[in-house]
Length: 274
Picture 1 (cartoon, rainbow, N blue to C red):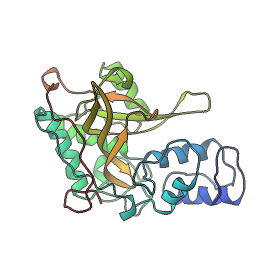
Picture 2 (cartoon, rainbow, N blue to C red):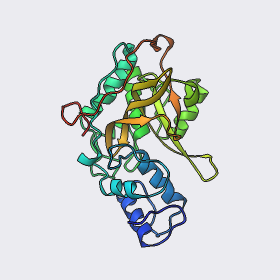
Picture 3 (cartoon, helix red, strand yellow):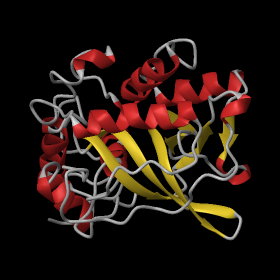
Picture 4 (cartoon, rainbow, N blue to C red):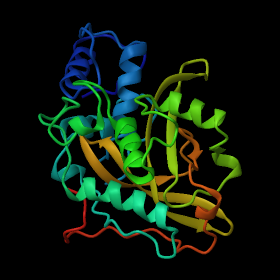
């Protein structure tokens, strides 16, 4: 398939829109015109899927070979990242607890039924609605299970609104000025053609952190609505779509000597991703 991007037209664009629609990323008529809504759908698909090299796709809104491959293999074995869910040592109790809750959802194989529906028996409890993207609902639910209440005061279905609320509460940390701690929340947002946030994004938990010198450079994550399931992943903090973190833990839950370093992918084992 040819490379597609904003402004293209034709049968290939229509086919792209039909695939995105079947996967729950595009809810409009497939017209064959690659415009704003199609680009937004491509961006979100790229944020949440792996390419043939096992790494997350580049989030650029351009449908090249790697994105076409992922569109043809959007879930299942070929979307495995094979990272074990290992919580770092020397974390504080609540940080360990929120990761335990998120990882249990992973181990319970929570996923969409059918693929692309944004729904299913395991997802209903996150209190969304059929068709809603559920990454933020998963995150809100895990926090409520950990803290006994929503850490931002209520559940959120919008990553952008969660960021805004965390800023108002003094819980937001810009990526450039902060090294995340396991248990924190990462947020990805993408921008329109003018460089402004368009309200769409992705969210999940930081599970482990790798440093270079004194600066965090990559993270293992636990995130919902990723390749249609709860997934353990690896994200590079140089990704411009990762804009920052929410640290919603009290002062006595700010450890300084927790175990750093990422987990390595493995091809076998009960704790690996599906």
